[in-house]
Image (cartoon, rainbow, N blue to C red):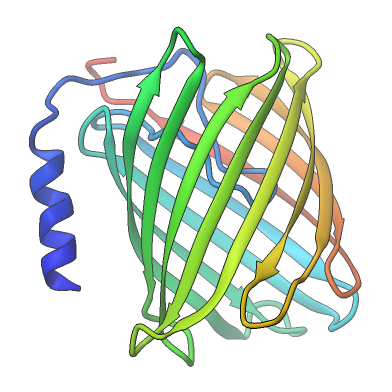
Length: 230
């Protein structure tokens, strides 16, 4: 694992110029990871809370992203749980995202995310291929295909997400998203949907509802802190 992380760091050093988009690109709302990285020297916080009716548990979460270059970012996430409002540590991940390919003319971008969960009772790692594109100016999609491994690097399961998003105007967008797991003789189908509101170019609010072995709902924010050079 140390060799893999070292290799990612070496790759990132090849890219020195910043790529800064006018508006933030968030993984929220929903389950899908964005194919974009945040941009060089940009720090972004994605925080929220989910509630699952089946267990009556709350899941506060925070995801931190920092761009080392236009193609590479480091990220870390923490998820708490418990019906006494975040009494237990559910997950603590350390990860990185790298843009494999970006073709503006074809409106296509692909990335690779690697993460390692050091906080879970059963340690695990995950690698996810991310593909983002669009059908039209307002209608876009993001596909996530991932493999999850246990601490001995034996395969746990496969993960799929298909996020279909529609931009209503400059401030508001909606999405529909099937997601779940596959492999090991098991296929799980879940569904969620939600809305986001872009308060300004660096701050976003979101809300979602879904079905995953029972009803769940969630809300959160994304806050981008650009470099002073941007």
